[in-house]
Length: 446
Ligand code: PLP
Image 1 (tube, helix red, strand yellow):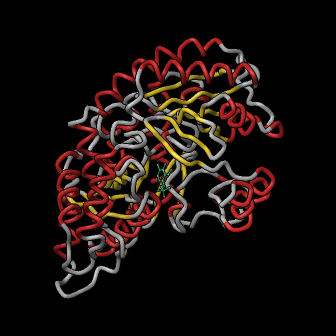
Image 2: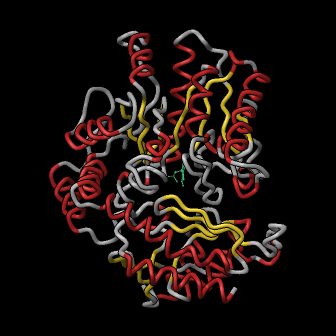
């Protein structure tokens, strides 16, 4: 189809995620055609460095032929097998076992989903089931943090702490609550007092709702879509410990942070935390096929298994749970992370990125530069002393993304004028230099 016709058809028929539909119609789509390594080429032949790994998912970069071969081989042999009832398939079994082997604590059981939103949805449903079947049906309330992102499913969107995901969709359910995020740049005090404040916020919320009424607390090890907000070291561990003290479940949303994004295999490893439940997606298949997962602790699994009578149905399942092609992709991606040295490269590249980005701290627009592994956030301000954000009516995030793209760089520009950087873990030091040069040029032009 001719390029102009494609753009017109896109406008007419394809609903894009998140953007205002009117803006999409005015601007038209950027149609991506191919990818190689960490570079993408669009339909106009413009080649850009993907500083955001697609949507923080293509950790292994584009064009990894062994993954293509694994998918093709599985598709030819057995393209589909249901995970319903007693059917199973080899790649799903093998991937579940490998995840269980590597995950922290006793997260030994895996329910596969199609992505992150339905992994969160599965967590919410299973938490309800768990407390109902263990005789604590009053435990219904769930707490998360402002600016946290946990997907856009019907119930999961209420756990998300971003107002745009509630506006005009109706407010979160009455059982869904948020406490302030641990946001060091916008907190007046040291790390220890920020951690104590978050702990107190959680304790107070649980006290107010009644400890017997609260089921779970959800957190990302690093807030992603809320603007790459990195809590102080020890925050995540303190929140997990507080959950244990309060007898509520700690759910780690590792949809972005797992698979080396912040350095170790799981973001929870950073603070040595063993969550009760963990959600995965994105890096699980590196975006080569859709797949997410909910990891369930042995304790929760056993409680549900032992109390649900055999012959009864646990009414939760999806046609594509444990899809063999996605699982075959996940297995090969995991092999590349580990045996192919991609996680190790991500770790050393993260250290190099920290050094390469550091000079940007003195840029007049950069109020705060934060980074863990290959996950970086830059907060744009118009006055460094007062930390004043640019006037939203100026549309700076959108302008930055546009200028960046013209300069050959993709990054994420969030509302509140924050920039997210999350390049593929295969990035080399020479490519990081290119990324930083294009980013500096973009900031200079803003
Ligand atoms: N949880 C987190 C932390 C995410 O970043 C995302 C997506 O960005 C989701 C959940 C939802 O995942 P998906 O878009 O695959 O539904």
